[in-house]
Length: 160
Length: 160
DNA sequence: TTAAATTTATTACAGCTCAAAGTATAGAAG
DNA sequence: CTTCTATACTTTGAGCTGTAATAAATTTAA
Image 1 (cartoon, rainbow over the protein chains, first blue to last red):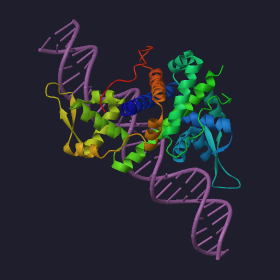
Image 2: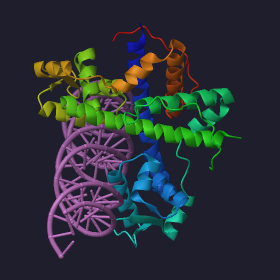
Image 3: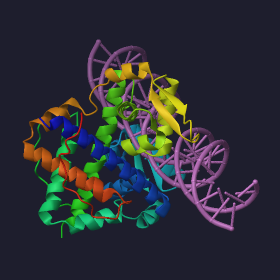
Image 4: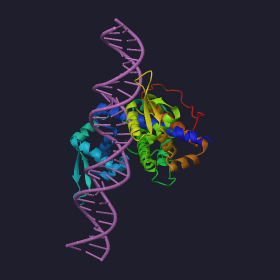
């Protein structure tokens, strides 16, 4: 039975991937002064318009608390504004400032160029396989959803 | 050309996986008082005997600095000792204490039970595919190695 | 031998991350 | 109106993480 070994390997590869992601974030900081999570939050706001913290947090897969601290930093630097909801004053809507839109123009790709190139070079079916494995892992790791979920719907025809 | 969409999806799934890993670490803390990185460092020391910080850092895919701070915490709690090298006094060898070995016995699996079950339930070829995709991604994301490397050697017949 | 370069580990710093506790607001029930 | 409950966000506390700057020891070169 080779599964235990496979599980160990899964863990090792995941750690490497997490580390690589972190290193890439540091590289991106040098290039544009923003971390990847910051950029993801900015993009999320850009895409969704005025959004609540909750919506951002869902959209970028981070906790509300994390998004709040990221928004704090972005607000300090004048990239976003917070606007209290008119009707419901508990709600905070985040909004890009002009400066925020500008800085967003300057952000580099969030995946390393090497990755992009090599992924591009893969055959279509290989890309699909990698993506589907990734989706599968994400789903299996998500302890909240107990389901065995739909799966296999990869190529959602979506923007960007 | 669907690649840009694929790249976006890769990013999204990666973030979900990273988050799930983090959440699992929090769960493990509750179960045994140690985080996943701490356990990985402990296991690494257990497996390799007296090891240098550098060796640990390679083995767990973390920077030297990170391993140092983790070792600090583990040393505070008396799970490891640091022993200066005799010949080369720059070197620090980490060593498990008895307490460290004990606590290691109590650590739960580092992957969520749900993941383990579902991964177990996959066909052998599916496991291999997932693993190989993961390895591929890890490799493509590793900006240090420029190579297109060997790849495809999955089932290393190794311990644990 | 002395100076320079390299290696090994640590410290300082900034940001990410979450759970849990706290704050403020809103809505419902009495 | 008051109290209870739920919601939306923020704060707090602790750990992870990496780079850059040190510090200490070793090795190499002059």
